[in-house]
Length: 149
Image (cartoon, rainbow, N blue to C red; front, side, top):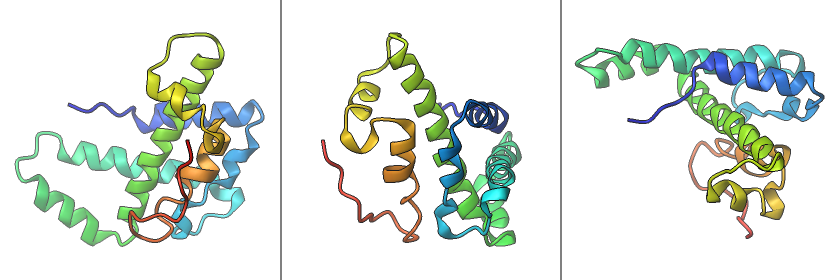
């Protein structure tokens, strides 16, 4: 079973970072497919995280998950983008926590040390700019950015 934090936990992590001066979070692009201005970034972040939480809740104990997912996706033309952005936001929050732990000398998984050793993702800000924001820009998984180790 895969565990994803609730939207509340991730939202709290991101707003905490903002309150500590991480204004780079306002550079979140929403795959260039959702129209949130810089002033609406926090409400956009919340909307995406809430969409994923609601999807998960609607599937709990459900026997016909495929039909429920199809119904939700067909009922909201932006839901697929919101779900993708929510996953990316959860990834960013996890990366922020891993980066903080690593900088404080705590033990972190090897992948976290490698991720933050790359010049394109030395910090969570770099990860957002160079890796997370581009995902979804083309509406496909193919990406222009090259990963450099």
